[in-house]
Amino acid sequence: MKPWVKKAGFCFLLFIIGVIVFGLAINFTGCCLNLSTWVTSSTDTGQQAEATTAGTSDSGLTSQTAAEETIAVQTGDTTAQDDLSIKIMKGFDKLVSEGADIPELFSYLDSNIKDADTGTITYLVGEIIRISEEKKFDFTDKFTKGKIQEKIYKALSESYEVDMQILAASADAELKPLIDETIARKYKILAVEGFFMPLVDYAAYGIYAGFIDAELNEFISIYLDESTRPAVMDAGIVIPVEDFLIRIDKSFKYLEQYPDSPRYKQVDRLNVGRLTAYLGGIDNNPVFDIDGKIYPERLTEFENFANQYQGTKLGDILKSYLELLDREGYKKTANIDDFLQKLYG
Image (cartoon, rainbow, N blue to C red; front, side, top):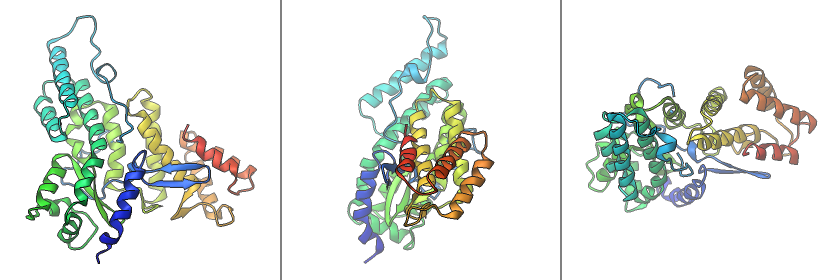
């Protein structure tokens, strides 16, 4: 029996439960780490993002209103483009309220992208990302039907390294329509514990980089990092720790620069999950031994990075954590748990 057959049911259940906040739930004493936004694909769809835009969802993202996200219309003094942008936005909101599917929203966006202003396009793209993140869970159901899992596995030459181009070239009557629909929704596929699932392909949003504002470009860049190379898989940090902390620092800079962003809370939750995993440890990257004593090499690592990031938000957190560890005798105590829990705000 193929590995995916044995693991799919369990992994799918784990996935659905975890995605409420971040997907993979890692329990600590006194706190719970949510990591779903880290579960993004390690393969490319062939639609590469524009050369790293200055800036790169989950279902918890608050719906954006026109007033929050786009045009500030001043007392009747509008230009022709303002009027057209308002009309385009209202048309989009109408489609959403009527339950239009994601490909239809992309079609509307693409047909109007040259006629609306930056604020309006930013709103449309941001909303499509939010809706795509919400609807990917329902779309995942299609990957549990028939022999889809087995057919993906066979199309990839019995590998869990996903190549979307190979899948797109499939002639299988059951698999081909699903892959076409996946790409049309700007999703990609990732194998998690032997189960193939769809996730938002942030690389596919690179085509909109020149039409949206700096904040959304930076948001997409943050999630593109994870989409291209997931940081946490199978209860472990799977990229070099130096790169992991670069991502945390990058997200902190976004939070400092865009405190009023409608995506602020989402990025904040992502960063808190990363910090909790790093400082408190997870199954395959423990910080404390079986007796609750910190591993000497982890302590040295924390000290080195506290110096490296001195003067930054990340550096301040590392410094505070080291001071607490010193007071607690470098053992995992209730105060350590409280410190990690308070990262959630």
